[in-house]
Image (cartoon, rainbow, N blue to C red; front, side, top):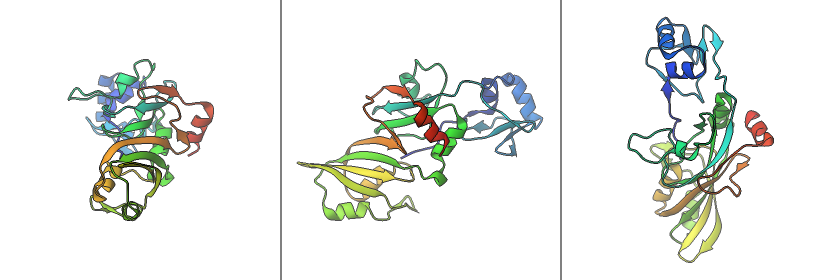
Length: 241
């Protein structure tokens, strides 16, 4: 379901942190004074501001901006990037009134909707997305048929996706409707478009796919396209992952 966060050039990140200009940063990178995740940085390299640890002369570089933590309901039709060369609608279009740049912690594909967590706190983002923390994500998925027991059993069984045997996913029925079923998928890992590929193997057509929670954070009554700041308890939960 999820992909890597959009990257940015190291010298831009250094400039955004207020340490020095981009041009000065380029010279210091060439001189070997910057490291990324403990490795000497190279000219032109890109970093993930929410995952990578950048250091200058041995001192970890932190963005001096106030840390923000945001919950967004991404509508269908938006790509989870900060810009798009094809001119498609993307995340910043929904966040114009947030005073600082925040980055999505993971992604939802363009045809999916629901909860995204965004922050400029790299440490929290890394905790949220690192596989070792097994942060469960829950999705409500509507398919175009009244699902049979054998299909449900298949979805709950270990499946091979793109040559990788995924961890078992807990799939339960939320509601049966005439000609449709709403399913709950609980994932502890997030392979790219995993739920869609699982449903393809089960010969199920997805009508709607919505992420409703990430760990203990729930989308609640948030409307499509709207966002809110996380409260103290929610931020504390993320920092303690």
